[in-house]
Image (cartoon, rainbow, N blue to C red; front, side, top):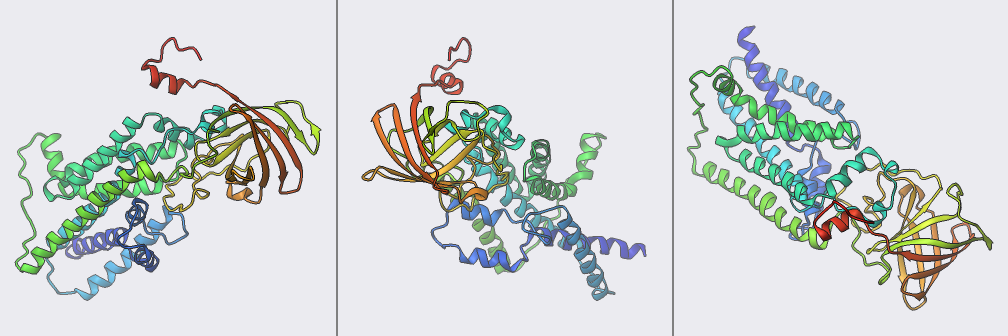
Amino acid sequence: MINRTKPFIYRFLFAFFFILCVPLDPKYWATLFSLPWGRWRYEDIFAVAHYIPRFLGAVPVFADWGVVLLLSLLVAIIWLRVDAGKQRDEDRWAYWIRAIVRYRLAIGLLAFGFIKLYPLQAPYPSLSNLNTPYGDFTRWKLFSLSLGIVPSYESFLGGVEIVAALLLLFRKTASVGALIVVFFTGNVLMSNLAYEGGEYVYSAYLILLALFVLAFDFNRLASLLFFQQPTVPNKWRLSLKVTWQRNGRLVLKSLVFLFFFFLLGFRARWGFYHDPYQLPEGKGLTAAKGLYNVTLFRFNNDTIPYSPTDTIRWKNVVFEPWATLSIAANTPTDIDTANTENLGARTDFDKDYELAGTDGRRYYSYTFDTVAHTLALRNKNVRDSADTWVLQYTRPDSSRIVLSGFDTHHDSVYVVLDRTNKKYLLEEAARTGRTKNLKL
């Protein structure tokens, strides 16, 4: 029985981590081969690298690991019966599965590392975000905005992930890279749990892979660091005697570097300047950016005075530099709780970061006609996408915009907006280089 326990464990671990790391879902490969080859964006490469097995739904859950566990047990039992009486080089199998795991882990780290190195994951807060009360944000959005206001720190975090990934791509430094991942991604996991982020399963997945890689040297590290005993490194390495095997190994490693390091890095840098995935890119109404107080508000020809509790009257309006208009109102909002990395948004309307995790404002994507002086508004919240407005606009001067038109229910509105020259602590501190004695 004892003689069969170790072979069983080897086979079980091989099957378990193989299923976790190697995409076996036909949909994954169908999606991969449907991507525009030669014109891949960093969002496409991220989608390839962000794989995690899902058996119980579109969103990964820890119960998926239970399915992997059962499948691995079944594979190990069958494999052990088939191999009954045969001798297997278990060190060779251990080498291969560790190589698969460390490359899978490195690819996952590079994907997240580059969208942090070039601060794409948590962009600087939008003007609407800066005019949203603190209590109207979810915990996750507060965490993301806090990271977005310090892009240099976000870049540092991305650099740590990239360094750990590069260490994992080489056998001799893999354990060092895995040790970095355990502590670094452990902090990411706790942040996801504390701030109700949506990537906690994926964070735990990366930690699990890192622990497996680290287990290879755990006894030697413990002997050296904790017990201070003379320790001999493991010098066993895979011997590839056939030329095509040696060349194949170099080709595979080169492809990983080319695709997930150089190409992804280049595309992410280009995307930071030209195609950020979190915020829209389409230009908004010329010279309209700013915060506007609602000086006059008429609804169905009735003038409604300002009231903080009125559910119809607008409080203020923000025009972003891109084609988004947000309205502060005391209207109940079905909060968009999207808190995972959605790099698949192909249109400006689909990009939901600016409204995700916020209450108190309604966000509209708009198109405009400078000849007819019209604005066509559509609510960006997928739950309220039927909320549309068709408005005429006039601009009596550079600081005033007058809107008039109808909503989806043919209710009429007439609004006079006056720009307010509000100063923001973050921008003033960045401009002056100091945070003390600032007067806003």
